[in-house]
Length: 413
Image 1 (cartoon, helix red, strand yellow):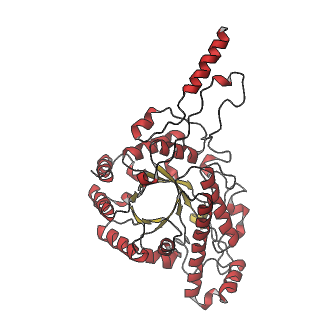
Image 2 (tube, helix red, strand yellow):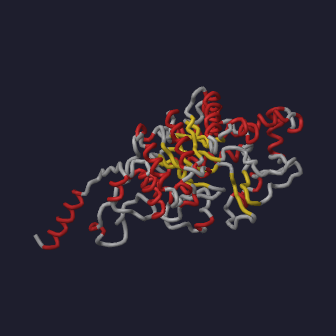
Image 3 (cartoon, one colour):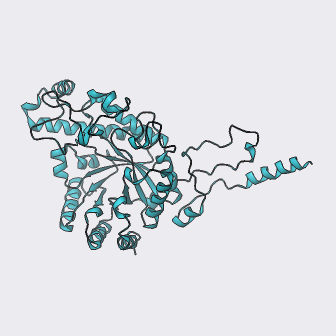
């Protein structure tokens, strides 16, 4: 046998000995593995581009998602889109979350009609430019969370279509591509640009279909463990007094067809109908998820004060949970008084008949470690998991003692 033939045989045997099913279930083990900083693609390397591709090592297998029982109820942390810009930053996030005892990461991938993953439907986030960042944040996040035995839920802002004092430059962005999908007031004026989100109109069937298709793209393209819906409501936070949305002709026609009324005929009827349109969207997303990925969880971020959010923002999260439209709600129960934190949670349990209500803890509001610890202890007693808002606040470099205390509580020590 020639030396070249012997070398080929040697490398062939090496490739057969490469482990194909490596599973990582701990923070320390994950750090020992070689870090991939590619685009997140699972395509085999060496499929083109050279006669010595057979010498290249086989690709690292994608780690398996953690078993549900190990990550549910969740010990979760919200990671906002501002927290990362590179693969290294995502890896650091996953390291810190794992070391702090979290088993679930709620990872934001849509903000205001732009996204943080390789989408065929919506353009990249503005900070990445039209050509994208050169890697796929959601793919990297899924892989790195799973390598550490954590669940990864894709967190999406559902209703926001844009935010800013000037229009987007990209003609594909919703604000430019579908101006008729946004809000118009009683005088036919489009919701003005400004510092807060501009909303798409969930009363229009074509808008609901678009949003469902966007959610479908995420759950079918990525190995996410859950889909987490935020701003699944009318974001009326900064609407001037006397202004009402939506009053475009098509919405008014649909409302008249459904109820025989005009908005001014009955405020209660108009509000109930708008609430029903949001619920319809949640139901449509649920039907899609059950068809495409029945193995994952569908959850929603809901206001801590459920009465306020139902009457002011047309979000009826309690009805979604009772009706099985979501698997759980994460309440944004951000409070500086533990008595308020407790009473809001009790109200949610009464409204949902003791459903899967996961308390979200507004750590960023807490001036003392003691307050955060007190609320985490309550959440542990309630037995439905917890979520901390947010990663950026908790890991700002000044809260080592709080992180250590949380780790001990989260891990049950």
